[in-house]
Length: 323
Image: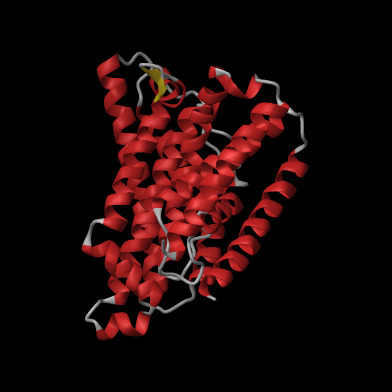
């Protein structure tokens, strides 16, 4: 069993321990259908943002602008829908306008990701500085166009996408499953995924192997922008509104999930399976804490402690294996 598989196995075991512990301390309330359905609605937004963050980290970089990109995409979609939709629109017209808003949102996410990619790949600005700057830029644009207010009045079909189910399965969870499959295929089963990991492992060796590192970096950040925009669409569907500062806590959580899921911050290694396991572990903790009436401060403290404990445990366990 290689190093990555051992870390993944330990994370899976810890997730099971969390599940069993929360089931016992909440006296069965944790095992309710309503609780699992609630988690299925909560999981997609953080999971997709974490996948976007993981892609950037696989190259040895980071994308601090994912939440800002998601919010800007949500604002673009909400503005387009509310301005283009006639007062007495039928179902067909509503669907077309909502689809147009979604396309504009994804386009805005691609533009945001492309800007990050150009700054990092062509102008050689470090990823942390480039995306820190664009995070402020994208948030500022969203604040200016909305005057800091929430955009409401979206049609019911938008709210249905974020809050309804298909055969008992939440629609956002189905959407998340499709996105996860796409990212898994991209990273694990395509030449682009191999080149992406090689670029993160050793950029110099990648260049001598004939890999166009600037192209890989640009396409990676373009993809993270698109994934962030899809999260923005989920956010406005769930809340039935758009605002420039929704989901501000998601940024640190996405980084936490990526590292906890086994992505090497220096680049080159990480799996989609690890990301999903890490998201599930955090959601199990969060759901259990809510039932136990823990404060938000206690949850953030525990998440940070959880990450540190896992990293230290993995370090000693892996060091022992090497010896």
